[in-house]
Image (tube, rainbow, N blue to C red; front, side):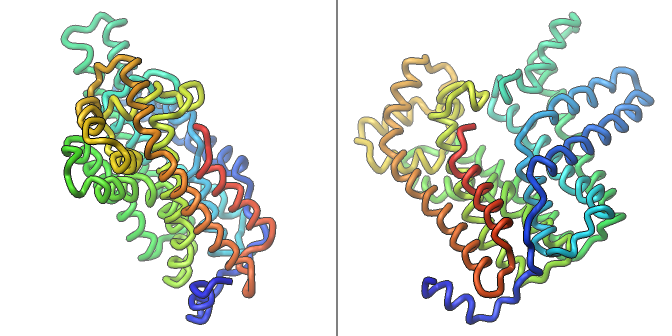
Length: 384
């Protein structure tokens, strides 16, 4: 045990109720997926009652939400279990918990729809992005006006509707789960942070690379656009819905935040070096989109002044040739080792918390520890 761990223990942290094992991620994902589909089908009937044309909204959302890793729903579910321990009433609570978890997936879908518009992305999970789909619909139907503008407008509105539906589904879950002040505050904070993170990302993309705060701002975007919202906050929200106290929420944050940072650092690596067959995105996509990531900041520390000038000219240039993208990818390998080392360190930091949770007070059992470790490894070292 490290001195930091010993000091933390001596502070008198009260353990969560013991959790022998957590529900399987596959089972959680299946229940949440079924719940989202059922909810969206019910909304489709409401939309059709307004206008037959409005059925396109529900059809698009059903298709868009069909895929995905369900990371946030699983973590919300597990946060709830970590706070309730073996007292988790699965029969009574699972449907409502699936609704709360599904609401996060709809929030995520709304963010992705808007993100693809902002980044001018042509694909999402190997298929045309939503605004591209509606641009195609415009052409197929022979509509008047500009097809690209129609696609963008449709995606923005459908993203807004998806966000509203996320709130509706969360409110439905509250009828069974109830709501605590901490859960209400965390839900609001989650929504706020991901939107501010998106703004910070947009702002960072127009920063000159010689800005002294490039690395600091890259970490801001990483933390608020994804790390907190993808891992730490779903865990915290699930625990808060179960009535976790501030002490337990702080403990969960110690595990969740560094893991979220490792998750997003891996995403940044995949955005440049990922296999398109696995990621569903073109190779070097972040280069053409002009992302100012930690990988960019670390690479700049290793590049010559001349190479930095080349990098600055290429970042955000959607017209780069494949050869130029490949050449730029090779330049960015200079920062890859530092980013991989940081991912390893953040992953290890999260595992050290699990080690503490398994010792002494034994807030989690061996099986729960294995599940959390496997999930943490999958997030930190995934290929897609």
